[in-house]
Length: 59
Image 1 (tube, rainbow, N blue to C red):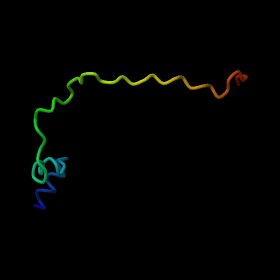
Image 2: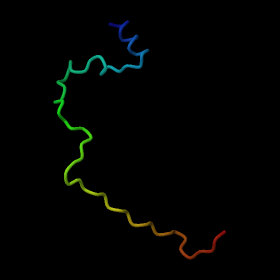
Image 3: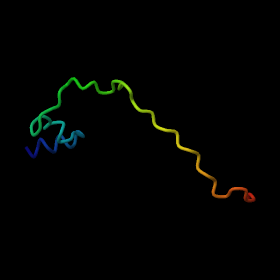
Image 4: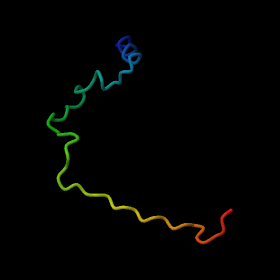
């Protein structure tokens, strides 16, 4: 196991790459990841920040 772990590490793999589904059950495949959500909220536009040097002389 130690040899296989070192080989996987050298190949840039993570623990999850080899051990997925062993300790935890995998989620259902039908998750529609990236699908548009109906009625998604829009983020409000922030108000412009007030200038700290309002009306001051420029350098």
